Image (tube, rainbow, N blue to C red; front, side, top):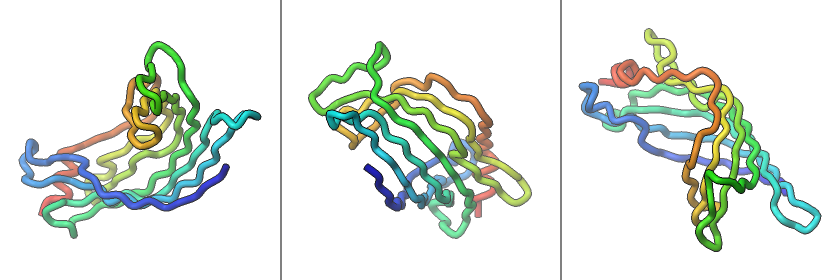
Length: 160
């Protein structure tokens, strides 16, 4: 079964107060998802392959016109997981293993360059206690790639 949809979210990323800047950095995220669910001949879910691409728009929550943007592009393969790292505890709970590649974050600021970046490969086990509603990271089994998080430069770059 194939599906496509658009998502728009707004969530906190970093509290800059401990770094001397009295504000929070939030991300206004917009992206497009295309996914394919694969089933066995009995109709049981086997795997989902999904791709999402979009734009992060990080901003100073106190001064929303102080903004930095960056594109992202991720492909993941999600399958059921049964093993010692994760055991379902309820009738609607289950575990998955997720292999993802791509660029998760790519935020650059004038004069500072790349301040927030994550790209490469990740392999993780997730627990879903209430069906597909709530995902909880159990373990990151593998992470390879480029990661950079210069919190001070990000806070400084978005300061008024």
